[in-house]
Image 1 (cartoon, rainbow, N blue to C red):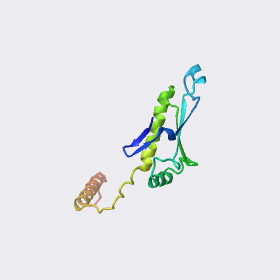
Image 2 (image 1 turned 60 degrees about the vertical axis):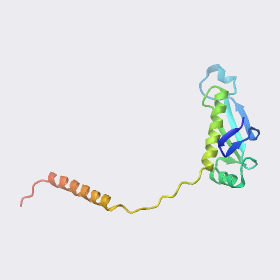
Image 3 (image 1 turned 120 degrees about the horizontal axis):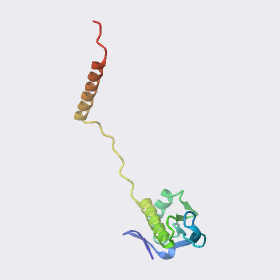
Image 4 (image 1 turned 45 degrees about the vertical axis):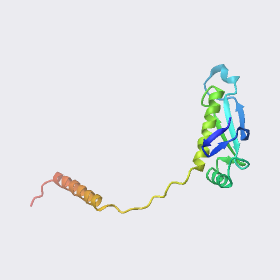
Length: 140
């Protein structure tokens, strides 16, 4: 089954590599016999689904997640191998979508408005008056 990351990008099932192993955690004797932990790997560098620009963007943004050109995602949250497969596919899709997402617009610094400045100074004056009233009366 192909993995649809976005309407513009679908990873073919032939490019996905699966590995299964025994999962740790609860499950009793069943855990000792079933391979429910899932490792899903995808070779970013050799993928035909990506354009050169997308490949470069993924390699630079997900640099520490990529080992020898391959992204690997693991899932062992559930006892069922099928559920862990679905979780691993979702994790990989999210990871790739985040790596290909456009940069957010940079924040432009703005000056405070005249009204906000007035409100701030009025609040300061009010606070100062409150504290002034708490003082002991002067002996003048």
